[in-house]
Image 1 (tube, rainbow, N blue to C red):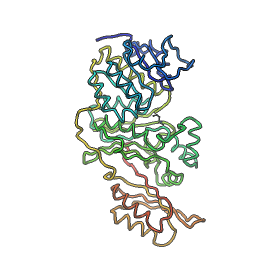
Image 2 (image 1 turned 90 degrees about the horizontal axis):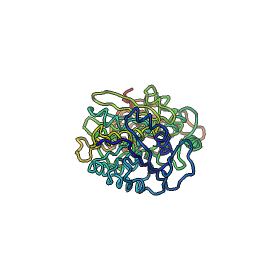
Image 3 (image 1 turned 90 degrees about the vertical axis):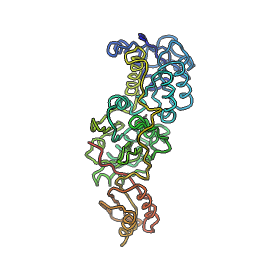
Image 4 (image 1 turned 135 degrees about the horizontal axis):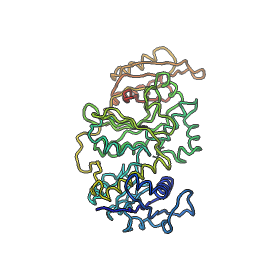
Length: 441
Ligand code: HSE
């Protein structure tokens, strides 16, 4: 089937929706010439209608408050879901797919939770469900994993995929400022949400990582099986000790196939070597490093959020769906999201992960303390690589002890930390941060 003048309907008209409507209304001739697809913005459904939106030329009758004018509209070929949340978006996307419409979404939370069901529904109805904008905004990492790297066994991927956390940690590295202060500044500048919990506790990155690992490994891991830690406990002291040891702290989303054919999927603050490219991704920027067995190491860098970068990804998906409709790539669209296939790898529980660790302890500054701590580590087969001890604090006669370990098993490390925390000589809250040395570049 070939069709020119493909009609697009938007569900939601917030920041990203505005960017999408700007491109569709202002650049349709350009898209037609360059991509060979004629797109027409036919409907926008928004719960409360704005009187005016700067820079967007919307045809009369385009705006509605009723989403069924988009999903049930026989004229509309492609539905773009940008309302977020899970319940309404799931129902509306389901309805659109059953009505034979191709769907584009930026909704990582929805796909992380209900992706399997929705991709199966799309397969059954022979329509595409494209989601490039769901992860790393303008960086084309979804298409890369599902198409460009299809010949590869993905060995590992490392993502800085939460701009809010990267902005906060970058600021903490640049100035002698604490987490809370930078968070407030990030909120004032609009880099962090009024309620930043999803971002700073690592859940936003975890939802994105689930999508990346579903594509890379065919694993549809339940979100509660992932190990997720945010950045709220990172202190200025940790930043400075890390620097002294030759590292930078980043919130890293990691998918890694280990030697037992098990996939580690984890999000946590991570010490990266200062000279690595990922360590130098600053501000609110995103980056994803993918290592494939054929292609080798690759790195993608760009803006992970914002009106136009995200709209760039959404419109690329719309164009792809348009090509599928007009027959260029066939009406049957493969999602490379294996809804039926049994993956040949399994999820590696966090307990079995092996890595190096940075441990910061607040201890009494007196003879024998280091010996007690190293004896606990030794008993759990954890070997110390280096130790830094800082002068005692004048006020309470405690000292900071920073230990870097050789590779150890998480389970052993957690047991050791429990025992260390129970020692009388350990007086403050301990810090444990994993180290990744082999981030390719
Ligand atoms: N809140 C996200 C971030 C952007 O800080 O990167 C949307 O995914």
